[in-house]
Figure 1 (spheres, rainbow, N blue to C red):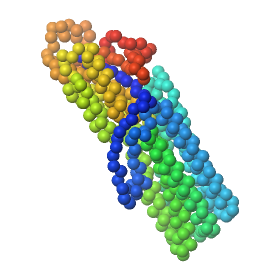
Figure 2: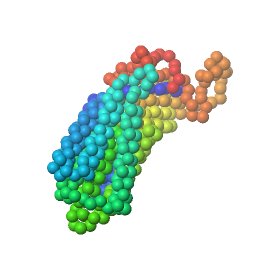
Figure 3: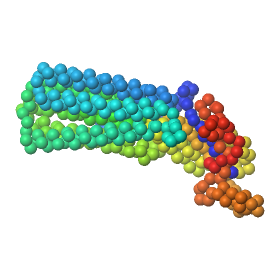
Figure 4: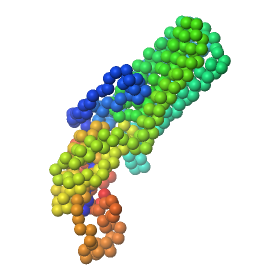
Length: 391
């Protein structure tokens, strides 16, 4: 016998997760935070799926407006200075600001209900938007590297140094503020794509910082400062790109922080009636977590008690792991005599594909699915199932 219970969890009931930990300090930690922002899965995280999507959309809108204002200020400087180079940089900032649009669309799609075709919903659209962001960061690094090498081979005289420095400062401040905002909100709601978009804004800030430092170097009589600083900024952008690739592709490959798995196993193993935890699997779909766990319980446990053990286990699991949307719990007998009886042979002859599965497979069991608020559903029509169904 195996028992399965599924739970759609809504953390809007006021439960708080305490994941307290010490943050590293010092110069090295500050540098690491720039290139690989720390993940804050703390009590201020948002566990309600719709609320998290709304916060993500709001963050995209606000950052889009902020980057637009930054680009407009640079346009004003372009008009005053008449610099063609600054005009090209302003157009680049405008185009980069628009990379937030695919993420906006992805968050909006993620709020749509699952369908018969897309049974897990549309959360993966967010991960695909993350791929687009990674592509844009890659393009930024290529452009920065190409321009730096070109100016190293063929030096370019910089005019209006003061205005160029002013534009670089405005671009850096605007992009870095947006980067901080996006990464903070992205960690809060569990969105790797939004964090990657924040890193993208940071790479644009690096580019503007290169403009500022280059103008200073040229003003001090070092014209080669422009391409050399550009190459250094290219290396910095590549470091940011590595972080973005790791996070976005990690989500696409169903990667999770092992600490989340450890927390889930500990929460399940601590439940009364659970003898051991066979396996825990977790994956992100967009900014929501989904879990699948297998538990060993006393083989003499009745079906009703097994049902309650699994239900209690999944309830505790969804409270122990932040941003967990659904939990599928399978309960198995811890020990059993695998020698088939005469009655078992009769059952197997009638149902040749319904017997106990070997090598880690599952037996037949009662399935119960709980909706937010404690309502039960046993099939797609939301009626309670009283029959036996394969787990």
